[in-house]
Length: 160
Image (cartoon, rainbow, N blue to C red; front, side, top):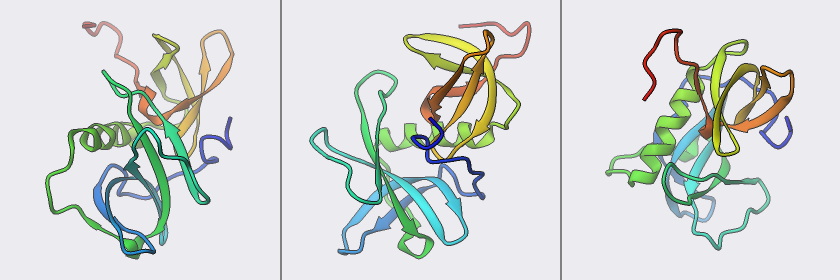
């Protein structure tokens, strides 16, 4: 599970930033920073349904809130990204918001997570590049992608 989530890691500031990634072939791709450490960044870019992961990319098929959505994570150098200066597609804005929420979570924190079609609560026991290891209240440990993790609601908070 840990390996599939990119391995245990803590990111430097910048997660959730909207950026323009310039590939080795000169193609400019709008994306979202998911991880940053030193001169290395992992950037989510939207991908058509037919896209396949390639060397140094991680296929992250993640359902969006209301429709299917796919993205590829590309590892790049910090020098290959710049702030996005044009309006981002709605899909990237949603991914950026999810990345910022995940970045604010801490190991040991009570969290809510999507467990199949249901929401459950547990403890974030380990943060990885693209998600975390979560211990359910029954002791089972699951690997959960960053788009399916949120802080637990405070006791007594009104649920929608």
